[in-house]
Image (cartoon, rainbow, N blue to C red; front, side, top):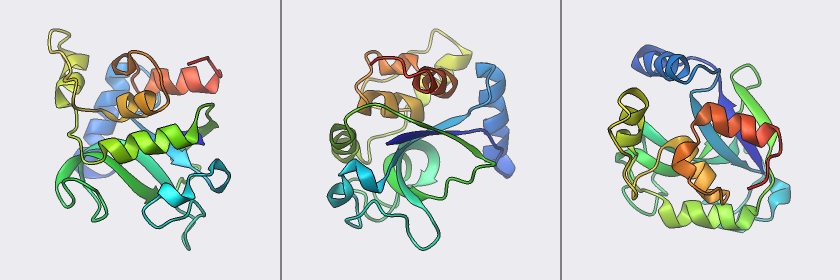
Length: 173
């Protein structure tokens, strides 16, 4: 299992959001994905039954997204915008920082399957700007979902930059 942290800038409004998040967090990352690989033993839990890379080299990644449409295979809210999802992603080396992550891959995959389709935590993101806005317990930002799936306590405290730093250092859960 690996952690992929996005350090590039997408086009359009999403690019403005990438820049704003990195500026506010004072770090290089604006998004987080948990990556499942063939050796993780969770291929049978993935939507297509394997963790092998597809024909384009894309791997199964799990996260929560703000504006992306949830895939057709999502257990809840398929085709709707924003929320917890599993998706194949090509982890281009010039856009992503990828590091190994310790943890129980089966428990993490099961967490994402149980929460698939849960709403995105816009309140937590607003809290980055205005600290008086609390996050919602039943909603998830990208790093919050990944941290919860990995078993970190208080996952809402871990933004994409902090989660990457903690994971890259191999800090205990």
